[in-house]
Length: 264
Image (tube, rainbow, N blue to C red; front, side):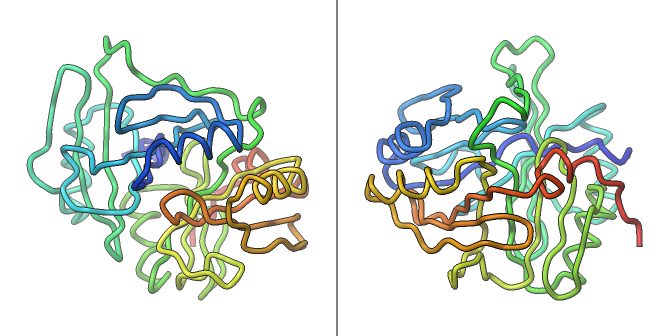
């Protein structure tokens, strides 16, 4: 399996009130809607899609507050068999419809993932947009893990995501295509808040967005300046922890995605 065979294409969050989520992401943050149904919304956040579900998707094998979808390049069946040879255990059944092929699996510490490949002639396939024309831009998705020494080899050696940076006992970040997949040892999402996962949006207007979110009744959790830029946290719909990052140029998403992977 090549180094870039899997690409993180969708991040999905579950909420209790879909209309409240729509008002937050579209009305307050100004994020473009790609598609909407009664119980599901897809938002265009740059290099991947942010999905919001009011109910558990019908084929989702377990109840989870969030899950990721990886697009498969090349043969879907060969990818499944290769991952199985590296001890990835898939939930049954692996499904194929007229529009796509889907296989669910659980990573270390019970994070739920999905492999997906759209049918070549499926007109509903997502066309990902440029990173440069989005503000805010979804730049990172972090997963809390109990032990980086267990989690890093799984995402690096089993899923073959390029490891970009790691600090022992703290975090690791991987190039997942057009977004960074991050691992954090422990559940500290920042601002003294624990979470099993959290999203990080990149923006050039952190102070403006902070005041806008605060004025519209959302729950800001703190704002501070870091060596890598200005950061603030807030609690979004469904109690999901989210973060805005006004980064220094060398820490911007496009700069990080250009870094050479580390292999040790």
